[in-house]
Length: 298
Image (cartoon, rainbow, N blue to C red; front, side, top):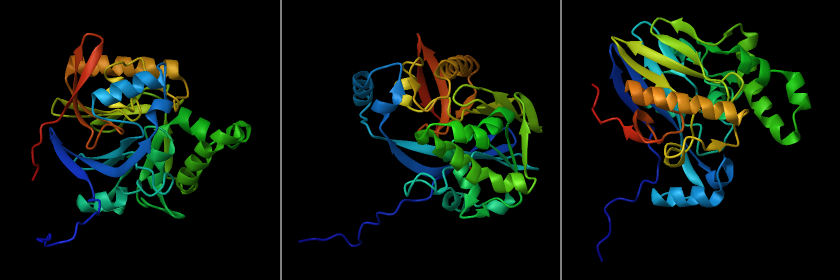
């Protein structure tokens, strides 16, 4: 009986993917995936409808959901959008550092880190144990998210099952705050030349998207404007239980979809299947995701 010449590896390769945006180099960095029971998490719909839509797309629940971060090399600054989950979400996430290294970078090269919002799968990677993972970086986030998630008073009055969100944010950011490396902004703000924050509040009180622009080319990093592509592109009205304000989050998503479809710019989104880069087009009241065409960047 013939046998394979080598055992199966079973190892997960570090994930990164590069595109050029004008003169900027954008690298998508994979933190891994996490299995989410999306039939139970999605709101403004029913579990039955969610399962039916997933099945149509050859998917099921729990759904392996990507967690992506994005590195923008402007030529003068290395800017990171979000950091993955670190140790906050279990063994299938926390792969950011391995992916960053595979992409040819080290954490101490990162100059600026822009946080879309302070949920654990976006800020957990700021720490490795009790050490700052990015010792040379300045961390930026919207004041409204800082006021909410870094408040001991808010944590104290939160229900028991919601306290973890505050604890994760504080554990991830407090060392940077103490070191004078955390700076807030309020809404739409240019942070470095060619990269600006855009207020997109709803998923959290200070949820932000970020736009990179070089030579007239644009890419917008959506953070958690959406979570489940198969469901929420078909029906943008469908929300998720993680939203602080689902009505506002829905409005922000619909606005972002319409603008992206009209303008045709690139999107990078945390929970779109890695690398989460592409464009969308409108079809009636629904949208279709068009992943970027693969081009090796040397």
